Length: 309
Image (cartoon, rainbow, N blue to C red; front, side, top):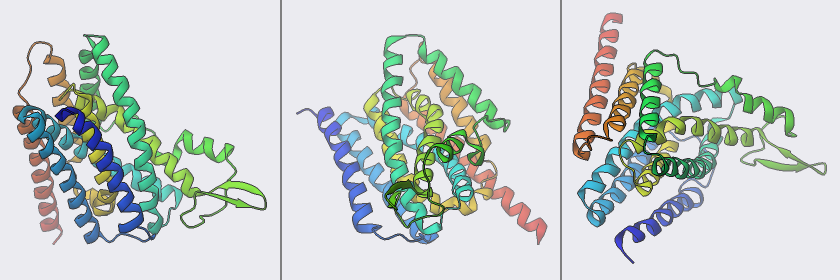
């Protein structure tokens, strides 16, 4: 078995093992996750992703390894936008704090499966049509411009058609039934609001993936790297929500920073027909953009606090 095949086998083994341990050992009871604990777990999930990246670096070489780290960084950065939408969604559905991790857990599993399909379709399109990078690249640049102008057309979670449709079609309980998504009462099978939250999380993540999957294909055309980066970014998304959901307003330059990242990878994808940019340069540019955005947000917050003192 060659190294590439070994890594293909290792990826689902690592992800499934991590999910099983998380559900049945580390978070087997429903409880609200404190911010400090969430940061610790976010670091652990990030460490697992980085460790897998090191394995890719060693087994497939520094070029492929750098592509993974760059893609992982982009996907993880874009997932911060997911957190904001998830927070609105949980509030709209009145999901109790102690049940939110459970909803995120199952939502992430569905999101990994749906993104896998999207990744396969995207890879097939790029392989079949030589001009597809121009379409993807232009789409990313336009998305970045819309994000920078705050004219993103993504549906507000509370007004989502899918939520309205599920409420009309599915027989629902009036309130939550612990961590159960489907219950049987008086001989009738009913869906709980937690099931609605689970489906909505996966649906909205898929909407975000329409942007993020082309973004990582701008970095690498290797479906394995695209899938691995997405999988590990999604694993960390669950605890990232509890770590930063209440302080997202402090990242005041989040939208323009992510917009510039999308614009950059879109530009890189368009010029890839004529010039293949070294992965290290792409990684350095993205790190610089994110660092500037974070530092600018910190500085603006300090100025605001000083002015209010």
